Amino acid sequence: MDIARPDNLKRKRTRQLIYAGSAIAVVLVLGVGISRLQPAAPGVDRSTLWIDTVQRGPLLRQVRGTGTLVPEDLRWIPAATSGRVERIIVRPGTEVEADTVILELSNPTLEQELQDAKLRVESAEAGLTNLRVQLETDQLQREASTAIIEADYKKASLQAEVNKQLASQQLVSSLTLQQSQLDQQLLASRFEIARKQLEKGQDQGRARLAAEQANLDQIRALRQLKQRQVDELRVRPGIPGVLQVVPVDVGQQVGPGTNLARVADPTRLKAELKIAETQARDIQIGQAVSIDTRNGLADGRVARIDPSVQNGTVTVDVTLEGALPRGSRPDLTVDGTIELERLTDVLFVGRPALGQEQSAVGLFKVDADGTASRIQVKIGRMSVDKVELLSGLNAGDEVVLSDMSAWDAYDRVRLQ
Image (cartoon, rainbow, N blue to C red; front, side, top):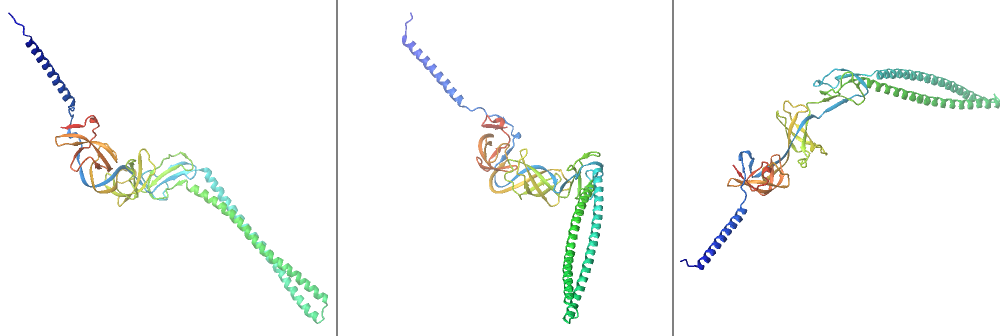
């Protein structure tokens, strides 16, 4: 016969409740622990990364840019007048002297104008000669008339003096004396007028000659202009050098100012470097520059900085010093490195793939356990391949400089 035991049933239910509560507590604890676990760090192949060590010491700040060699003495030869290209005598690449004829133009109208100008000069020269002869003849006539009047005046003066002496002796009448004195006075007036006319005639002759000479000079200047324009139909460079470009063809009609040829002196070259606008702010006139021509290095100095920005770059002219490497020629592509300043005692590392001057950037610092953790690093001044570190790293630290944007979602990575 079974006997009911209510106490055992009660204890059994209590144990069940305790077991269920314990299980729930364990589940809660495990859930909280799992939620606090960090995600597993992704693995990155160490051989594909650029890792550099932070150093302290002197740092040479530099900026680099590409460019070309260009002649310092470069001249475009324009057409002085319109014409048609008749003949190209010298081709690009040829060494030329200042008076070497590069090409010939033709302009029949200009040649006719030159002939007309020459004829006008000859006519004006003949007119000037004729005027000079005429003025000399007129001057001689005035001098002759003046001389006759002067002789009559002297003769009348002598007669008046004689009559005066005779009248004092009562040998001639007073009327005769008065007549001779009047003749003397009349001839004196005529002689004075003739002398003034002679002087005025000389002044007038000089004025007419000056006017005719000015007209002749004007016509001669026109002839010289036409002659120079005709001479310039035979195009010459004006400087010694190498002919680089002849941008016209035989038979082509050109107008005044059209560029016919370009000549450069290949012995005097300079470098034109294109520097990124973000790196050009510290460049100054006179800074040292090293130019790599691929055949050797050449030293130079910054001579000019373009005040404007074109296509995101600033043009910097570099004057080269000393002998140039062999093979240096105009339009040769070169690399230039400009020395900005020398920092004596700074903390620096290789230039990271991302980051600008005076900015903060996230970099992965290599830890001792083979992982890399993201830290914030403040960058100062920058060079071609080095950057100054202001905070975030110490000397001897290893840091990943490669582009790690693919792991922006992680603060730690495993280096494999």
